[in-house]
Image (cartoon, rainbow over all chains, first blue to last red; front, top):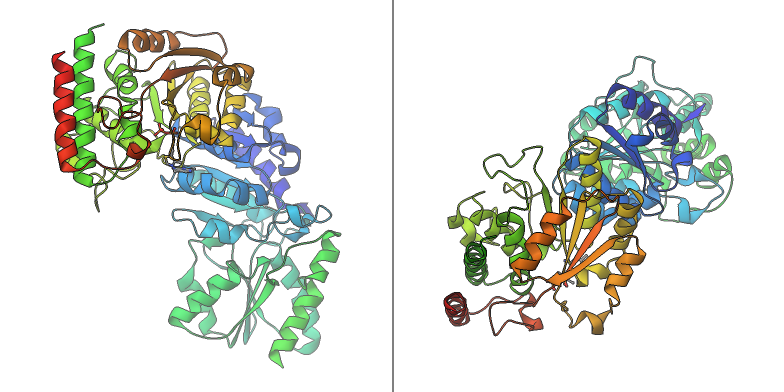
Length: 306
Length: 276
Ligand SMILES: Cc1ncc(C[n+]2csc(CCOP(=O)(O)OP(=O)(O)O)c2C)c(N)n1
């Protein structure tokens, strides 16, 4: 088990060893976002700007203008919230090569509670033109996504989590912005993003008892949204579910629904945060409280299948 | 320094500013006119190392217009410097024009960053100065900020960072014209004692008249020679709307175009001023 933020820290360190174009920034959270690994080995290429997220994004923009590939990290709520307009105007509008890698996304931040639990960041980042929005589901995918982001020229937002996640994807997995069919089933398809891939997998185990065998699709790229591929997959199923550790407004569910509404209208059932703030608690307790654990997902499916 | 030549550039640029804003029927004359001598000193006073034929020259100095609404002074200066033809300037603010209401680095050569949202240019400049230093380049970074813009908290985040990172390859210039949109800065949100604020943030501070080439050019040239591990701010005392009598110190001309008739008066005043 490893959190995607940890895999990010390791991937960033590897990139730092690979290329001296890579620089990293943090806003006094390097131990949590794991940019500390990079900072330790490359102090001259690491900039802690203090608790100043807006400034961090501006400095990252300036570093990219000087020819570097900056990776800027803080908690998702502060990156996507506090510094939203800096990302919008200074980074995305001129399409600068800045990578915003934000950790502690979603409710599994845990005990810190609502002020620190970002359930809006996918929406906030996806609405900005020129942005690419990526959500890795496990450590393997995280590394692949960070490498991809380095090679890609342009602004990227990567959503990372605090909670440990098992390796789910094959060791030789290579991210390519397309949906990844994790498990082929029948009749029902679940599109999941981030940590919810894991939780859906657990739910599918429970659903075997009911003779229900959904297809499980991992959606690591929320923008550009893989509309064509999603419709192709939906065509082979009768029911569509989406699962995300994010508000159902502006996240994966909304995007799937809007995609289908335009060319293949059908009902979509959302599993996610239902227009609510987070709250304090242990990560696993919170997943169950919001119906995002295996049992919650199972019940949601059973309710809708009835 | 050939003062006469600089004054000639300043006159041309003021003329272009009025012309482009008049034809656009919108834009920001006041804060463009107050910054003319500052930009002329940078681009024609032998301060900036740049090549209009090679705008991405790695060793160039960088100028960031943080107060992006003063786009007309940047456009006309870059045109005067040969980055692009003056003939397009009259498309300012029109559909499909590269001369956007606020500078768009993707649409024109010589524009170092897309600005317009105030308070962000100093952060960009800090990042760029860090990057240039990391690359071992001797290039200098200049940023021009409005005084009202200093009310943005992010400016002071950047001010702290510039000091922390010991950026002596960075110079901020404040266009201290005392006005913002809703009135005098000292009435809207007092900035004084401004020099003390910057000093307390660990910056070296220089105050001068922002319309006097004999003061600006040497100050900017010296600014490039520093190796004192400290950022420098130049507080340039200016007059908003400078050069056009009915715009000088008039808040209303912050973001209002002159009428055709007013523009004619402005041109004749610029001419007279030249004949003095
Ligand atoms: C973040 C942000 N808030 C508000 C504005 C609208 N605005 C444009 S210019 C201006 C006043 C700027 O005053 P100052 O910095 O003193 O510039 P100058 O007087 O030199 O034109 C304002 C509030 C903006 N462009 N950006």
